[in-house]
Image (cartoon, rainbow, N blue to C red):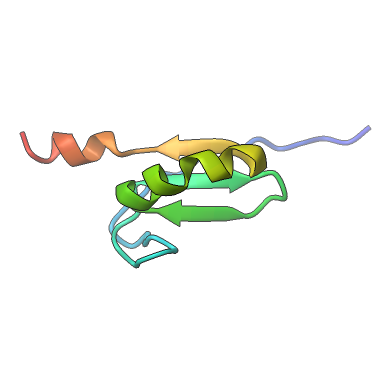
Length: 70
């Protein structure tokens, strides 16, 4: 029998950068193969459909963008 540890995703912060452009990341894509990709809101939206077949979990913190404006 194998045990699988489930880790809670850590919140994204200013140190986390988009893998595509280097802007602050607001989305973490946990891949089926165990890797992860970080995206700014713009690139997360651009690549969303292509990621669906290879992603196990999406951590979307784009709501922080509108919270900061208030």
